[in-house]
Figure (cartoon, helix red, strand yellow):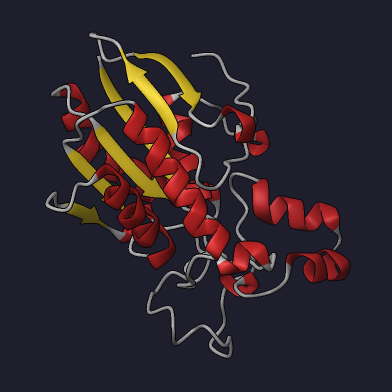
Length: 231
């Protein structure tokens, strides 16, 4: 039985400040570093030998993986980094405080921007303070847009390793993780709205010999967010 472990990065500075982060490249808080260390300790207890590591191009994910690898005492393995595992692009909302945006646009509208499957936030315009810091033609993304870059990468680069019975660790982001779980756990676009991904809590997914999901669980049960879906 082989294993896939998914970890959302530890708490970032803008997680703590309740800002829309997306593709803005912000670092971890001290709490976030502790969460990554705890993730590494929980993973180490499994005594799994990993065959491949994947992460995004954003430093909050990269640094979380680096901390985890230090705990695992694995300093030689290649890390596969790609923007295709980045957080969704929050467009014009990037860097803005969530509570202030709720006051301005209303709770329901913000919920649609944050949690709906197909609706994107307003695009990032040329005057946005982060436009020059985020060098991309992408100006905003829905979860559907995120799904459409995460899943082809998973199908081409990660799933073949699972079929080869390799153990894989991915450290990435809340929405790129939600997109991947839609595929792996067969979650509908209606139900994915309810799924929250906790920071720094490894989700262990075990595959059977026929490569179907055998079971899944968060390693830190005290901080686990409930997953509502049957496999």
